[in-house]
Image (cartoon, rainbow, N blue to C red; front, side, top):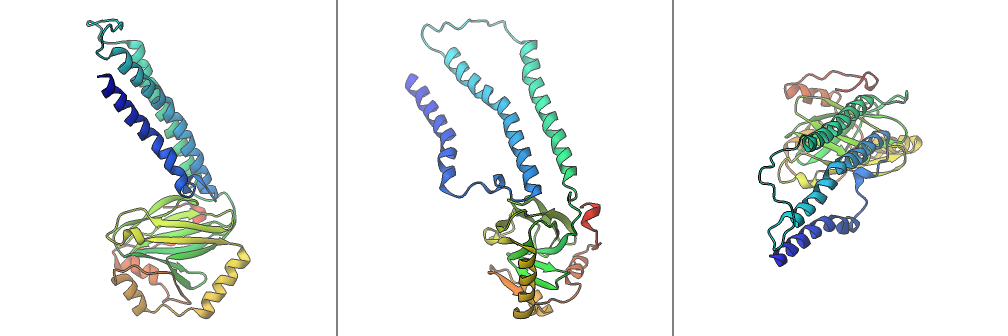
Amino acid sequence: MNKLVCTKWRAFALLCVVPFMTSGCGERILVLNPAGPVAQVEQRLIYLTIVLVLIVVVPVIILLAVIVSRYRDKPDNKAPYTPEWSESKVLEIVWWGIPIVIIGIIGTLTVRDTFRLVKPATAASPLTIQVTSLDWKWLFQYPDQKIATVNYCEIPTNRPVQFVLASDAPINSFWVPQLGGQEYTMPGMAMRLWLQADKPGVYFGHGANFSGKGYAHMSFNVIATSSSGFDAWTKKVRSTAPPLTKTGYKNLTTKQAVMGKQEFSSYPPGMFESDIRMNGGMYMKKPITKGTD
């Protein structure tokens, strides 16, 4: 019996230790390495939630060990035998009251931070990027710069970016962990998400919703650079990349294939809006300064 109990506790200890041992095998957890104001607020909320949850989890694990050790069937067990005991008002208040208070705190702070992130705190004019999730690739259109890219986008630092998200394929979810939370992309709908990068870098992005066998390859990079670097990049794309024609766009949307990065010097006007209407939706331009959907 003792050998069996020891084996179980060793297995439990191993399960607890393995995540910490393997966490150093790759890069730092991206969601805990924020590079913008949205991700920073979310990181604080994550840390706070972890601490509050541990207030419940740690005592429960300790009590589990104490109860198993004290009340298991063993010779000369000195634990009191109280077959008539059925309840304790004090214990019930503790194990119901503490979680209720914790949930109330987490819920209140989550609502507060959610409304804080509806619009950016800065008055700088946002850069708009229209994003379409496809099988199995991402199309980025810049309505002000009149250029488009596939599987990567470039943004200026210290400037809010309004991503207008849609899909011409199954529902997906746009997520750049170091810049902020995720938002769904759906056919016929224009969802909005604002993000901002405070420092130059290449930030990993991925679809966070399973969408078929090519889903694992639906990754993209968000390249943050200075304002002058962003302007130079847009000029380079306009002067060197080929245009995206209606036929080329049809090939992107109808062909289920994984592809690499691509750039386009121009695209048919109103392509993003017409795609939403074609999927049964209505596209309404909504400035980021008035909030998000």
